[in-house]
Length: 535
Image 1 (cartoon, rainbow, N blue to C red):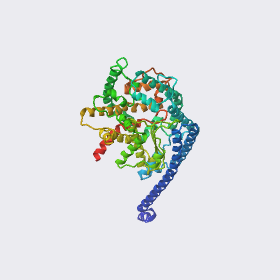
Image 2 (cartoon, rainbow, N blue to C red):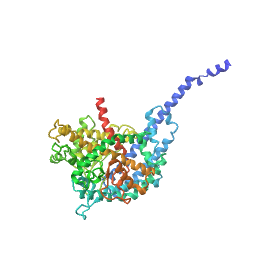
Image 3 (cartoon, one colour):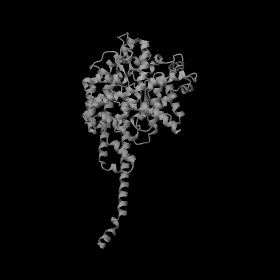
């Protein structure tokens, strides 16, 4: 017995120390192989992403059939690369989970979800074409003038947006609201039916029950939806008080025949096409109208502001915080005002071309305070891009989808304060006046608090559509049911299932998840609190 034990322990090749060292060496080699593998994928992926983004930019900034075909081909090429990369990543299943470096494990985890590229090529082509077609319908939709039905050239940006912002003619506002939905959403409905089927097929190929489940995956929380519901219940009482106050002010303007004392508010009277932001009716709702206004649009116009000047002012603000100035490519390639003679997607957006140097904004900027804040918001996206440009591509995104939207809005909150507006010459003087403070806070509430139910319901509706809880025969009715229950608004004219009012909002036809905005409107107020505590 003694000799047997001695024989075993005397073998240096099988000693515990040797085995531990061998395991450590194998682990280190696996980590090195994984790092090299991911670096190789990242380099190729960045090149493929740049090409695909460039084709997407060309189409979004100049909607032509040639650019549409180029975009479609680029999407298929990029999807083929994603599928190839995903297949190579899958070969690491069972190994990457054992890596000790969390930075590597997290890359593998995210790359294990392929997305819509999991669709067979024919289905993927249909899916991409559907999103492009729906976006094109939305971006090229035009409306006839209220009192000149033969003149049908009014576009969402800037024409319809300006009418909703400035007109107080009940009939004109109703006309604009109705005809925009006729020209956009109604024409999108049939496309959306097939889109939902293909989106769900892609989700199932990725291991999710439906596309709604795939959309909430990046939040990495099993209780995400329940948390949102609880959060909305906490916020709802404040919204309801604000709703009642604005309803009374609108009733004073339009009369009790049009605005009831306790019922929902007609959706076309909020100064915004979707009633998501009520700040443009601040002139009707302001508690102390004799006090100075915080809306500096008139000052911007009288001082000769241009879109370029608005962007330069935004850059100076970021530079004053010791953040990075915009690279030369930004000023060379960005579209900051609507070009004449061509159709484009006017919805403001910030672009990362995946190469660490090319970042752009596309915005049909109007000289208004609202657009000045939007400029800061979009440039906030660019600043975020610049801060993480050195990371692997899989990490070049927000900590969660809501963070990206919140970063820009945190900075816009600072820009909108009376002291800052005075500092940049858009307010003559700032008084220590409680009534002026209340006016300012109400205007902020009309922008921030009123958005919350809309930011929540957009994806509540889509989650139910994707899960099948809401059948396509009831899409529009379910939409207005949510808008009534959460927002307390109603359509100004009769609606039916021939209509598709969700499709009259950009993020539905463009297939952009929206719950990120609800998250961002909450955390953008938590960020300054955390910064103050840190400081």
